Image (cartoon, rainbow, N blue to C red; front, side, top):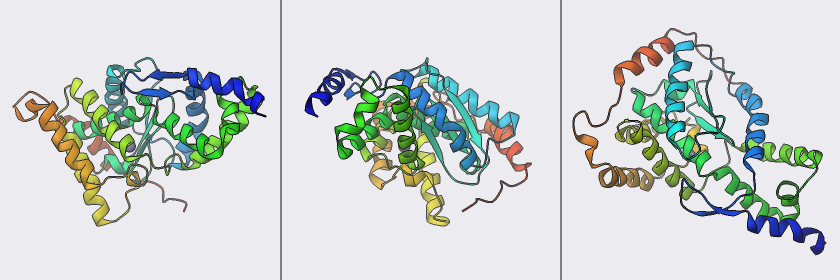
Length: 282
Ligand SMILES: [Zn+2]
């Protein structure tokens, strides 16, 4: 048994590399190809569960434009990034491995400018560039024992991979419910701030986003994003401190932009004219 496991374990140890987004050493359990395949395989099922892709060309174009702008400024510009809006009233957004990112209509409807949209998309891009799903899988593998990892890390036959990837997707049936660690969240906030400001968006949009989520959860209590992205007060304070320290020009006129009017025209007005999203199944 030990002999059988030895080769993949060595392969895993040597698969440790510095992540260019975070600057941290990381055990890469998923090759880029497998990461992309996993996201592509899971995407249709996630889209369907989220009410399907919204049919609203102007909203879709705005989300794709903002998302692609940030993704191209990230450390993984060449991933097959894809940004879609789901027709659900849920206040949520999530990223699948390989760069497929979904934002729910319900979250867009809470926003008032494009910098807030850039903040949530930048944060989700950060989960992908930092490879947090990979880290969750490493964690899962450690919990389940190395045997489960052989199928992904080793030279497994396609069948084995697919079988394992099925298990991953069902871990991930909770992917959206799977809690990232607080460190993951803070790291994604930092990366999101970096991407959005490089694109010229005001970093205060990130704080506004957190205030929106905080307020919505105090009101209805139904903020699905918070189930997978915990938002303790310290996280908000950390972002505020980071903005003051790293982006001191945030309050200089004209230094960074919010694009409020454009967001109203391209996103909020078209959304207000659509029929309400279908009621959730459960
Ligand atoms: Zn997050």
